[in-house]
Length: 174
Picture 1 (cartoon, rainbow, N blue to C red):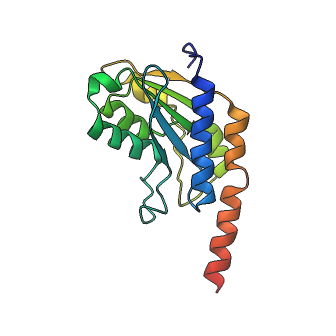
Picture 2 (picture 1 turned 60 degrees about the vertical axis):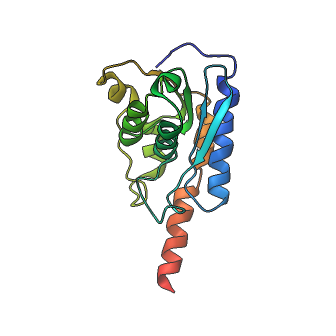
């Protein structure tokens, strides 16, 4: 997963981190995604939708963004685009990115690293399957860059899941 970097990749990945921070601050899971065209112009952003979508465990930022992108842009346009995401796309999100036709992915934290941080959690049952394996099973190439800025990406998850468990436990006791 060592495709060449573009001059704006780190800046746009940090923007995905900012989207994840906003999602976390709003009480949602700390994940964010940004879609940019082939010149680095941001087209859309999406935070995690778990809470806002009614506790939907499939409302990952990447899947929601890929679906929205597919409704608004042609496959030929999206093939030149890049999806920046705070964490490596899970198999479901990788499938959505592939089916939408997005040609490039840049991510921060690996799925393996995310699984280590989250542990067993009913709101985010992590699958440790690298996205490049999902993309490799497809009929067209999807370029993958990552992990990139992994320490910053890891920090987005710090204490979130343990705090969420503690909050849920104290709410259940009431």
